[in-house]
Image (cartoon, rainbow, N blue to C red; front, top):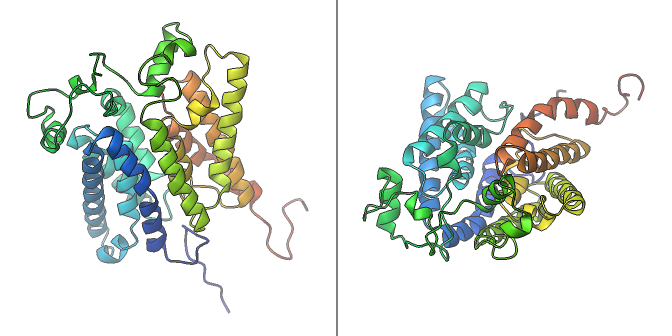
Length: 354
């Protein structure tokens, strides 16, 4: 008698891969709603564009590889990759940004490794890092939250800005980043990093409108919405708690220690937890069942590595968010983590008798 074991991704929910992928996609809905509320429908356009390109790219490469197209597309992994990358792209980024990022994620980071279950790195984050390194200005130019924006945008303005670079009234995407007082605004993480490099203290930086005296306008609610969706995934046993908890706990400890040592140059744990892609990354990116560690102990170690890298790059690196870099670097450690944390088979001992 032979035991048949399917390839990764493995899941706890006793359901097929397509249902798991669909559940993860559904769990992003609260976060997407929050993004649309604060940053406009450009996020929906980017998500739709990314999903379309992901499905087309997957079908094209499958045809070249002479693999069954409809069967593979039904696992919803390409749809989820497009969705996650679409969420990560600034709402008014030009259309070709989505095409390049998703095409690279599907064709190179996923299919050229052999398809779902064989890729070493999270495809969505590979595509995102490619875009961030190649087009850093475009990928860090998020729009001003709607309540601070100087120019309200219609649906036609959004489509025109994405596909032509200017609105119907001739305003450029950079001009749309101006607040009601005419100041061009970056994201909270980028604003703080820039202010600290100019010699300002965190307290002085937090007096700016984007922070609203607490964390940040819009981003705090986006993170809470993704937290809600992530907790639903844990409750449904689609993902386990180990990785998200390890990431958030490690980030909290690192940020708290930094803040206690020097509050003038280090932000609080609340700021790090509720800014950027923290919750989105902890629950929806790092928990990818293919590229994450396998055992519960391994998942905790994996999450701790991501949390530490996330804080170090945010605090001392050149990129303000750092989530994608932290996840990809941690992906590289997974084979070693699994080697030393996988449980021994029944009746056997670890090498060396341990």
